[in-house]
Every structure is written in structure tokens, then in C-alpha cells.
Image (cartoon, rainbow, N blue to C red; front, side, top):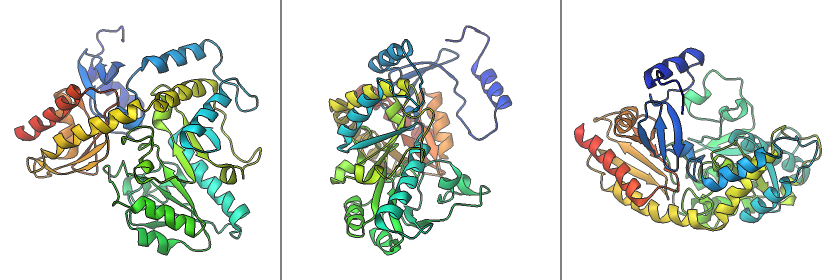
Length: 406
């Protein structure tokens, strides 16, 4: 807790705006403490966190097992760089590989780094294994995608806010409609090395593709000798009621791109997970990261994997997710136009005649519930998997009250 009791929310908001460019538009909430599914602001007001850091806080704030692992590691070793080995690295990589059913783990830091790594590996695999002519590799991506904000990634975004005025853009990407299997198949040719896809598009409003789509993409990629890269950075690690969103259709990608929840809400941790036939194309000096796979990250990441290995959080997400979606569907026709999602993840389209998504978020914050808007009148709910049934019901009830007031 901040010791300066004169510091209040409005002052803190002004200070933040004074010292940072306006590349975010946060709600006027300034958090000072947090535990589980709840946060407390600088004025002492508590809020139910139903965003969970866009899935980075799947296990809630300050999960005791994760905090204990971080504390223990802080007392021993925090960073070596990959110039040397350290005693936490092998356990993390082995246990994450086993969770994914793969051979190898390449640790990085952020989700965008994981995606960039996947792109580089796919291209190298294409040249060395598939035999694509030099500098001609192509990757198929989907409209409405959100894979990060690097200059390469925003070049194949279809969101004007993410893309505009950051060119020139990296070539080699073909954009097709999301959920359209025939479009993916038509976009693949002899230069295609990968299909990069989100099993569920989070930033677009928690858009779930048609049943059979992911299985169809897997089938096409296999038939055409193309890698399937699954961006499970938001959708993975228990969020949808399975370990991975791909699991709902029995799909195993060639590369899992992981992040957010892998760091347990404590440190940024990401990873690319695949088999030797793909990740094995890398050689020393060809790719790396100073902080990727550092001891602190590995200590926390290993505990995250162990939490998931019990299956408890996947079950909670499935069971409470069913409860969440039932409650949200009851609001359709009462200020809500549509509800989408899976597990403890939902996109809710508010009737724009009533309010924007931003206004809905502001009014929910006034009632002590934190969510985030996207694309006009859509709001996203992604509560931590430690949330209780009663807390979940409370969040839905507050949304209902906001709609009824309008």
C-alpha cells in the first residue's frame, strides 16, 4: 500500500498522463494491492477483477504457490543469460514440454516475442526442410488477428489502430477471413511455410470459429506440408476449460505459442513449444534473448505448469464458464445483442443504442467490477480461474444492473 495517504485516484491518473505517452486509455482506476480475484485502489476501494490481465492472471493475483516460488528464487539467483546454464532451466523446459506433449521448449519473455520466434522458426524450417526458395516463404494469417505489436506483426493486422502509420511492412503474409477453411486452403501454395492462427480471437471480441474449423486447418496443413502455429497466448493454459483451446477439437499444432498466464502474473514469460523436427532447425547464435528462460522466470513458470498438471484449473474454468455463459445469455434481449466465448472467457456485444463498450466498463467500475472494452460496444470478461461462483454471479448481476439503468 502507498504510504502517502494524500495520493488519490484522480491525482494518480493525472500523474500517469503527465509522464507517459497516450498509447493506452485505461479506466480511471489506480490499483495499489491485489489478492485472488480482488484488487484495491489507492483510495481503499475494492474491485472484482474480471479481466485478469488479459489472461496473464489466470491464477489470480499473488497466488501463494507462485509467490512462494518467486520468493525462494529471488533469494538464490535471478539472471544468468543463456551464456551459462542454471539449475531451474531443465525442469521448466521438461515439464512444459510434457504438458504440451512436445519435445522442445524455447523460452522467451513476451507474447509478441513468442510469435516473432514462431515466424522465424517457420521460415527457417521452410527453407531448410521444405525447400522453399530463399526469401520467398509465405505465412497465412486471419483477418481480425491480434498477435502483438512489433513492426512485423502489425504489418499483417487488419486493425487500423494497430497498423496505420507504422509501415513499411514486412512482406510474406497472406490474410484470409477468420473461420473460412476454404480461404486458407486457397491461400496455400508451394511457398507457404505456416498457418498462424488464434484458436479463439481474443482482441477481436472473443470470437470462436465454427465447429470443425481448427480440425480442418490441421488437416489442410498436414496435407500440404505446412506448419500449424497456434497462438494460445490468451486462450491457453486453462482459460477455455481445457489446457489449450485447440484441445476442444483434438488439434495438436506444430508449434504452441504461449505467454501471459505462463508467468503467473509475476514476471513476463513466454515460450514456443514444438518437436525437434521443427524447433531443431535453430543453431547457436541464430535466435535468442537475454532474459528468455532466466532463473526467476523458470521458477515461476515451473509452478504454473504444476498447477495446470493437476487439472483443477481447467475443470474450474469449464464448470464456472458454463455458469458465466448461462448468466450472460439471460441478458440477451435486455441490452445485450450477443454473447460469445468458451470457458471463463466471454465477449459481450452491448446494444450500441444504450451505450458504448467503454461506457459499460466505466459504469461497471463504478459498481466495483473491472472489465475491458474492445471494438465499439463489445466488452470482454476473462476473470481469474480462482474466482468463486458467488463472485461470478455478482459480476453478471452488476452488468445486468448497468443495462437496466440505461
